[in-house]
Image 1 (cartoon, rainbow, N blue to C red):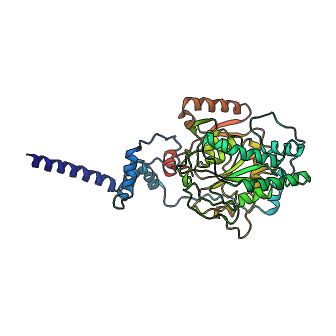
Image 2: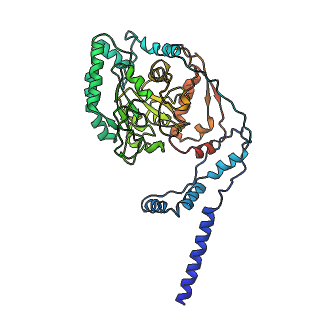
Image 3: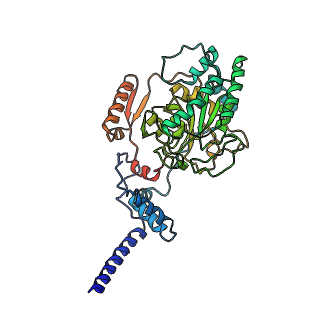
Length: 443
């Protein structure tokens, strides 16, 4: 009797295993028929993906290390996360999709100089704005020129503030060299004392994401520190900031390889949100956003491929600009056909064309080895031009209605204020669910 029960149990287990293997090894299913490609209906829904934590996650991680099991497990997770939707859309795409190339032209040296002139022509005589909690680039420049403080004094205060900030929020900087910061600040102090600042950025502290090369620092892109040697030269973004006199404080913590919009790094921890240390700050350009939002810096630079500047800017109350493709040159080893660099700032003016954006969008020099998407440029609006008094602003109504009540109320209030001076137009973005599944990463 016992022997028969064991045999029956083995048969049941074998049948269950066979069904499981048939499921995970079968070709990925094609889901519901794809809607026409131009259908703009809002279709974002929650994905009922499997969740593993604690001992289950440890077991799953161990199984993934078994070469024989990896394909089956990977197929199971793809199925469970709705990849069939992506395949459905792919089958609906015509073989010959009409291309719509952007009218790109090279941005010559004269055009770039015209942009930078807007920042270089800044004057401390411009009337200061109302006091705020955090200093902008212009606040630093005005304080330096009035003698209220010096870059050297600012550097000392900043270096003293970094450990306090990290004690409260977790690791913000992957690399920060106090001696290098002091040397840059001393040089800027001498230039300002001689009445020869390089630009409005002279002596202003800035930081960049640990995916951007900074000479003398290793570049880990959020991965575990592995003893990698220092970078031999600055990325073009960093070089332009240095040339303007900015103090490059260091490289900021990011989520590992940029593959998370949450803003947590398993190797470094933090950094958490300055507005509420119990909440995430968003990613993957997490440390750059936290440094600015906490008031440590007025400007920092990140990379954005799937929201890595926009997400932490939104969660920490900053202005974040994911610059247009082919606008900001950079170097990277990652396969970044989607990635573009852009700044975080405390005010829209710091992030707009006339200041940081103008500075970092210099065309790449010949032989600089920048990413291929940065070899062509489209001219920006004229420097210093007044924005249109009345603009047409697109509103994705479905996303607003799909938000939590507090978020929806805040967005509606902002739209009501914008509607007083601008025209609001409802817009539609097709296949948001498929786009979300295909690009489910921070970028």
